Image (cartoon, rainbow, N blue to C red; front, side, top):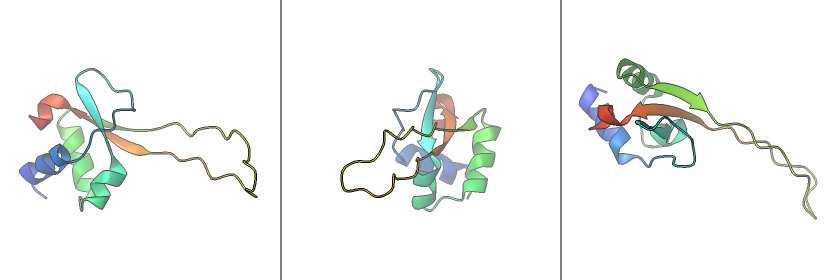
Length: 89
């Protein structure tokens, strides 16, 4: 993927608005990049080259089992890219 393809891919993906980022950046989930056909290594290099970074969400603590459940679901951790807004313009 070249620079313009990666930029277009990131612009087409939804922003993970529930993830806290600096005021001049947005979070885009790695799972969204992958499901859209993006190469995570190339996107990672592009993000870092444009002043961005990576992060991962905190695993939620289990609140116990619900009636009828034998095991608790595993905590879900999301990996994401922190992309400067200026890099997407």
